[in-house]
Length: 166
Length: 263
Image 1 (cartoon, one colour):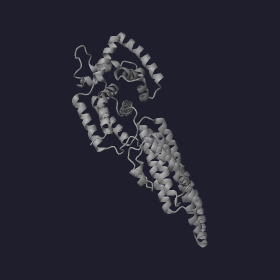
Image 2: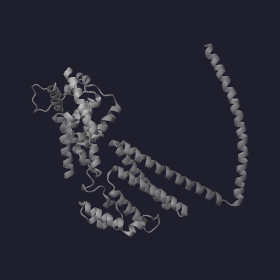
Image 3: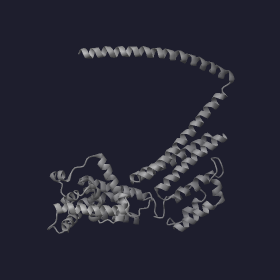
């Protein structure tokens, strides 16, 4: 029989799976690895919870674990670019309910966001694609909220430059 | 431009797992949860201390409902820590009447009240250090029995293993700075432990040597003097050999060089 904690955890996994997967694909551009890493994130989080440790913000906690796993993955191997993946038959998935007209391809959108300088890329992605608060981004990146706010502000200026040009 | 960026964001948000992929991930995680059930029933629990406390208090504690509220826990801790027995037990050594209270109550309560990895690793390291100090004190008193030594070693191992595990967990969670700091403290205790054990061994060796009857000791002494003179001769020989080999080597190098050049 499932306890409340198990139910809550399963619900949280279900709720955040798409966002975590998206973040992972944005960082490593490999659908299969991204799926594995999301799964591993959940397992590590569960193990932590079984030890009786307290988790205040499950979303930030998931991202923290996933970020570490992504760093490990970077160390393991050089990841493929989205271009190479598209050539190999990489197809992004979409929510069925979304309006299909006038919609940019999800993968292309992720690729376009990769044009943002690395320094601002992640915070812009977290803030606008993942709809995270400055506080949550600060918890994950371990940078002060003020720094995050400055990065978002400067990042948006870069975004304006890049997408004006294109 | 703004519309462009908004469109990109909107589109990026649609990037997700397919239904099948999501179902598969959820299936796997549900199976994983089943295989690894949560041991602690209540979120108020930091450690499942009641099951591991081997003291006269345990039957009373185990009868308490698992959902013990924090004020009750704090009150119990104050009672336990405020007790003279508990305080007196802190300075007890293995073999003392109050030593089990120190190990099974005081230290386990200290672990229980520590919150977070940082505090946990500190408690484990301190308790490992206490075992080293106890070994040192018993040895100084000359009352360190083999049984006490084994028990202290086992307990020391338990605490250091736990501390190492917490450090690893901290690293996995990205708390690298805190993990490194904890690791430095743990290393200090490990070094202290090695040094105490080394001193005990040297002391044991010296005691055994002193126990040898005088005649045998004298024989041994003569033998060692002879050995020393033998060693001196040997050193000379070695020196000679070294110089000889040096000559040989240089000759070899020269000849090989000439051969090489010739080719």
